[in-house]
Image (cartoon, rainbow, N blue to C red; front, side, top):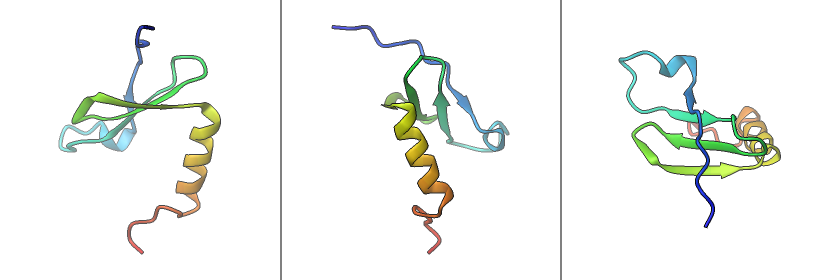
Length: 69
């Protein structure tokens, strides 16, 4: 069994305010891996390739996951 890499998670600037509760956190410090977690559930980590991350963020920027619609 391989060890879990040591991810260095960061939050977006908007989430660094102490008044903000949970926020998505991203780690890109492990080569070839983008890790994502919820700050309220730090033990649950989703990983993907940089290519998958680019696909996801591109879809978000294009409004594909717009919850206000």
